[in-house]
Structures are given as C-alpha cells and as structure tokens.
Image (cartoon, rainbow, N blue to C red; front, side, top):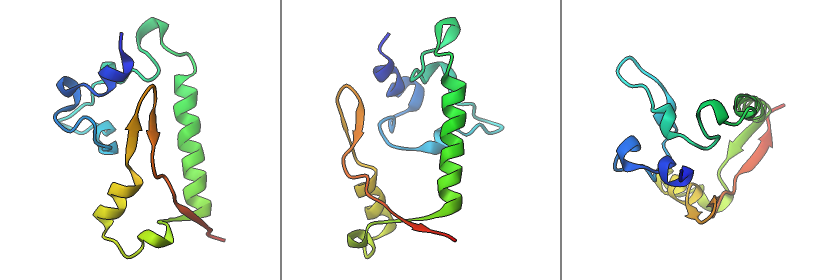
Length: 111
C-alpha cells in the first residue's frame, strides 16, 4: 500500500489534502479524522509498535521547546503579513519524503 499516496488522498482529506492543516487531527462532536487514512506508522496488527511512543515523545519535546523558548520568525520575514510568513515557512518539496524547503525560525530563551 502506498502510505504517501494515502496520506495525501483527496478522498480522505478533501481538496486541500496537500496543505498543512494540523486542525485536521482534532476530533469534534461532528468530525472524527480518518485514522485508517494516516499511514505514517502503518496500521492494524502489523503497525509500528513504537508509534504511540514516538507521538508521545514528539508532544513532550514540542511542549518543552514552547515552554522554554519563544519561537520567532526570521528577521527578514518580520515585516511580512502572517499569511506570507506562513507560506514561506511551511513550504515543502515532495520526493521519497516530504522535506521542508525553508524551515527557519529563531528561538529566544524565556527565562
């Protein structure tokens, strides 16, 4: 099964499947995101046994970064609109993996 193709399936994710929209993964009273359409760690009985650990570890690291650092856009993007900043920073190229093309940020220690 083509995990990359399934992860970008218009059938499961809609016309904007290739756009970065983390809110897709938030369940609401009227929406439950399709777990079987997210195959990064595979699915079913033969899925990755470390997927839950990897997801939990990612959340912990992100929480630690956000707690200890203020995340800022690069100096050359400060005067642009939020939409332009997002477009520049979240652009990626597609190949064997999805690779960010311009993922620069500045970190400033909070305390």
